[in-house]
Image 1: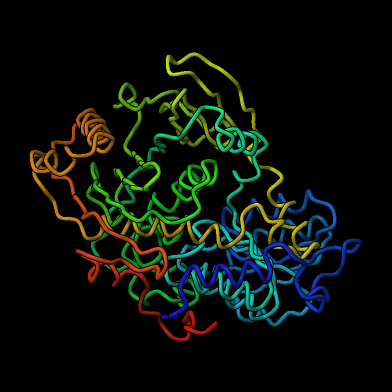
Image 2 (image 1 turned 90 degrees about the vertical axis):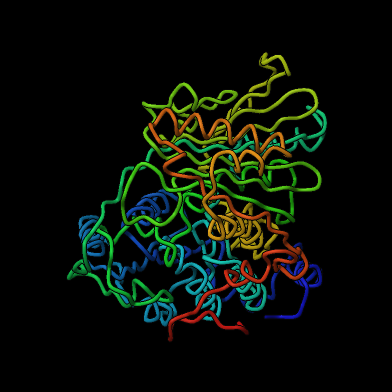
Length: 493
């Protein structure tokens, strides 16, 4: 790995591009403030389809190409463009798309394991990038994304749209100015039911419309061992990051930036399991992770079992299983507990309360609908500092995600009494474990028969972006992956 420390890298890269205009010769890649920015959307099944709709509503931008390894989704979108009498180029192989000189920026809504490679390749091809969260599939490749963005002077924004929410922006300033006193702790929660993905008895057929080699990319070209090729990749380690990366990619980022946390947590521990289903999913559907920052802790609860059975216990300081996020129907949010009160909310805003639970002030948001406009504006200005969600910020949040997943993947299943001993020294973790136990009990999960997996407390060195101390050897094995040629994120970008 690169011997340059994180701090040295930050000093040099931010001095070069953080607050000044990028080299003028890169402007030729963008048509100009009065001309349309030409965009290619890669991955058009679900989120990519939404991106097409959203970018079409904005002025000064044209979608000129779409790409997907599965032609069934390409065909659907091409038909829509034909109805609008708009020509759009189509690609199955992303590498061919990069050869198109008439593309200024690429929007990536592909599985997690493709984010880094596609971003690095795009930067090398002179394209700006809007990449969905989490930006990476592992910590090492996230750093390579930052290096590529800086080396090739590209604008690389992350789909962390809450950073553009008109309610959360003033909230962050309110917290920063000490409006509620010092931050004591932050509690992130996602209550989002996930059904079983099923269990297969053998390899499943690949859809005839899909180029499975391209779909797998850096991941092993193994037989498909799940019913649904698409979306359920989230719950398989070779391609996804679980709910930690899926919804945690938003809510943990919110916890971090609204409270001014600028680095990865120096210590992290996770416990949980995949309960309620005997299926082909590998990632946990019930999980608690503690990010033990020196200033204050951030704790994150994931619950994905049916809400109807545990609604009473799935309520915490204004965030309930009935829904916090009114925009997407997803139940997630955060509680920022300070000296003189707390904030309860998330995307779309929320309220501050005093310590007796009385409302103080509302921070009404809009879900961050201006986030794509922010990306386009940064493309025109060529200023990294204009981005609400630069790739470096995405990398730091993704590192939180990956470290929590790593602790879980190193976990051992332990009896309830042993788990209690593990968490008893930390009041916040002990409280969350108690709530997790109630949640599982309400869903008829017997921890005596289905023990929790308890991961080790991992120590992370911010400078080297490696784990240190006890369990570091095993943890560092997850910093990167074995890439399958030719889909290799390069050591030197």
